[in-house]
Image 1 (spheres, rainbow, N blue to C red):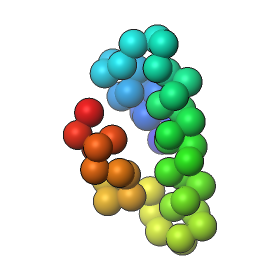
Image 2 (tube, rainbow, N blue to C red):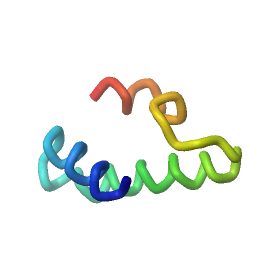
Image 3 (cartoon, helix red, strand yellow):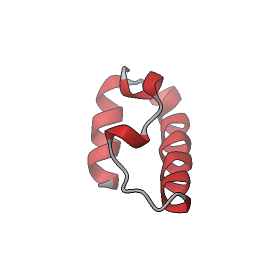
Image 4 (cartoon, helix red, strand yellow):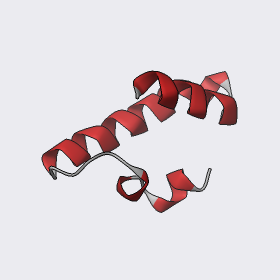
Length: 51
């Protein structure tokens, strides 16, 4: 899942925002774990899903 997310976001953003996307992905992952919900499209913020 991490590799897929890296490739997926890597194709949509430039190298300057890779760390930002990793941070956002990590934050969403932590929130999903705390909420005990599976990480999916519904767990992502609307603005992140529309990139």
